[in-house]
Image (cartoon, rainbow, N blue to C red):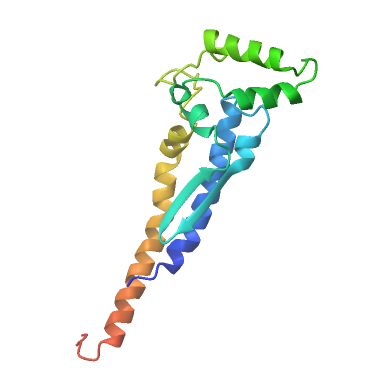
Length: 164
């Protein structure tokens, strides 16, 4: 079994780099009203796999607005209760909810296309594309060192092997 000691160390560096990249992209796309999504981004390594996720449930809707089919009544109610200047009654919450059902979520999203500097969706895909070469350049040397170390160890432990 290969032990990826150096690769795991480098995956932590890559995880932090991607997390910061995602946070900066959320700011660039103006998805930082409360910063909950940005603060909720975490990465973890299980086995040899790096996963980045968010503790905030609406990240999929921010990444792809088509994911959100209807507004969430409880989220709207919570927002109204925290918003100053809006009376937090069930009637006012229902009015806002009904309006969002009819009219949608405010300003329409603009899909980013090559040559267009407006990008309002797919923050995760944008960051993945932006950092793909840098991630490969960071991981390749450590993977090579781990594999070379494993081969050296196998040859060293195999007394029947003849190395010339």
